[in-house]
Length: 309
Image (cartoon, rainbow, N blue to C red; front, side, top):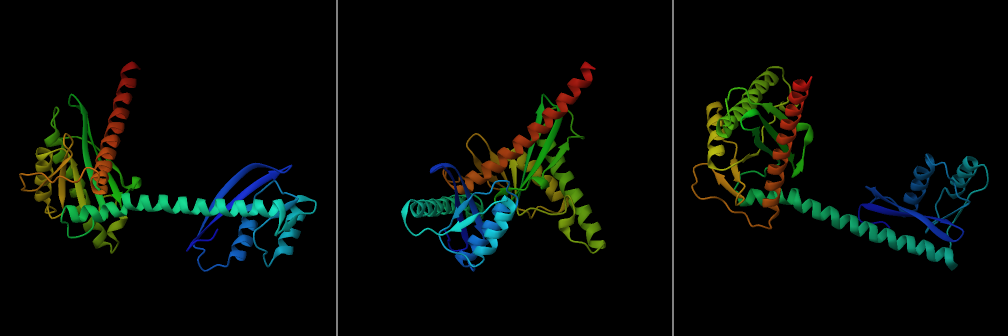
């Protein structure tokens, strides 16, 4: 079934008059292609790596290279393969059923895609309005601290781009300068290290005539989410001011009531509980928390192993 710019293909495998199995395929960028050409191209791709070749293939519309594909399939099978376009009877009904299934597959796929777009790119735009940002926060970074009674404190930096995790951009830090359990000082340290490294990379890349996207820390975010309330936010902003990057919009997300705190504002920003904007902020905060805990556990397990040995 051909939609506006993509096509769904339903494949039925029938043996002895019974439907044995089925497959669904979505083909992109097919808006300018005639349906008969899509069918012909799909048959070639579908059977290119196949080890099974049926005696008959039923299609909804005849294709130009009908005979060529038949000969190719027959040669691969070692016996005759026939491509038919049934116009009546049970075979025609099965082809019609496959077409209806393909139509429903395409509709379901596009509904799911639209929902995903709303919770990602749509949420980014929603967040821009909710936080009164000058630009849409295409790149978001979130920071979290993890420790067990101050031992082996670590931090995570996770990145979302267009509302989706950009896992290759994630970074992990061991806290080096802070003694004991001090989330505020730890947050100040990791944010300072992140941006100090970024500024150093930017300077070097600029001298070499290279793009800022080529460094590990040289891409700066449009929005920063700090896991925590006013204390953690203040610590992060202090480090950013020291380095001259305080212009980047930065908010603290307090977990108890899921409220956002902004620089210099005593009252929190409360996003609607069911809004895509809040869900996006929660996802990046939760991902930062997960990534930090995973790193912390891996270090703890290594230490436990060394202790046993």
